[in-house]
Image (cartoon, rainbow, N blue to C red; front, side, top):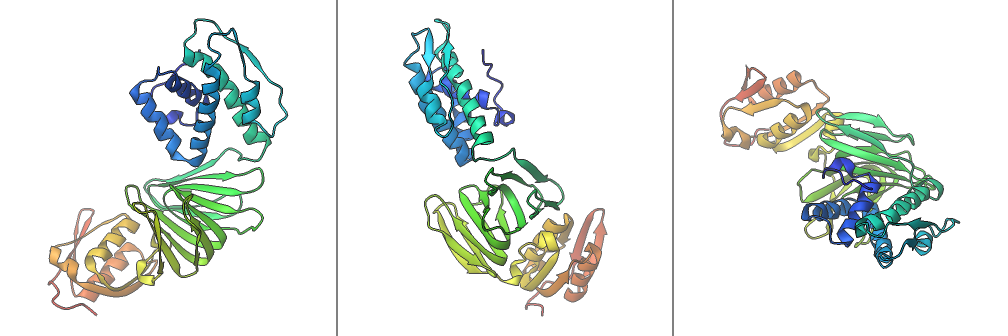
Length: 344
C-alpha cells in the first residue's frame, strides 16, 4: 500500500508519492488540496510537467483493466522506455483494491523506468544544490565553472550523461562559465532559458518580481523561452524579460546599473539619487544606513567605490555631501541640509 504523506514541498522529489497522487486524481479520489499540490508541482519545471503527462497517460490506460486479476503493462513500459530493451512485466492485483492503488502499482514501474532512463540513457546525474541565505558567497561547480550567489538565492546544478550542463536558479547569481561548445551550459530561471556562448553574466530574478534581468560582462549568451526566438546578448548588453507579456527588451548595460555589485562591491554612482544609493548599499552590505530627512533622498551623488569597507564608504559619502554621520546602535544616520540643486 502506498501511503500519501502530508502535503509539503519536502516530498517534491518522491516519485512514488507523485505517482500515487496522479493515480488518486485520475480515479477522482484525491482531495482538492492534493489536486492543487500536484498541479503546482507539475508547473515547477518542464521535466516535472513531462513526467506528470507520461504518468497520466499510462495510468489512464491501466484503469481500463481494473476488473481483471492482472494488469499487462507491456505497452506502457515500452512507451516510457522506448530506447531501453526491457521485458514486459505482469502485476497481480487484488479485486477489491481502490482504483488509485491499482494504478499506483503501474506507477511503481513508471518510476523504475524513469530512474533507469536517468541512469542508463542520457539524462542527468543527481543534482548538486547550492544556496545563500544571509550572506552572498562563491561556489565552484563540478565542471569548473564559478557561481556567485546573492543572498536569498539558490541553484540546482545538473550534469547530463552526455556532458550537458544545466543550472536551475532562484534569485540572483553571477555565472563565470568554463565554456565547452560540445557540452552546453544552460541556466533555467522560471520560463527563461539562458545558453552560454563563452561567458560571464549575471541573472537577477527576485522573488515576486515581474521581470528577469540578464546582463553580460564577457562573451555572449542566448536567451529564449519555449514560445520565443532566441535573443543574443554580447558583452555590455542586458535584456529584461517581462513576465506579463512574455517579451524581451534589449538595453545597453551602463556602469551606473551596478550589476553584480553584490559580488564585486564595485559601485559607480553618476547623478544617482541618495535614496537609490542607500538602497544599494544596504542591500550589498546588509547594513541599516538611513537619512534623517526624507528630502535628502532627492540629493544626487556622483562617486566610484572599489570594494571599500562600510565605514570608509559612508564617511566618504558624508564628506562629499557636506553631511554629518550619527551612529544609533546598529543604525547609521546621515544628517544635513536638503538639496536644492544636484550635488556634483
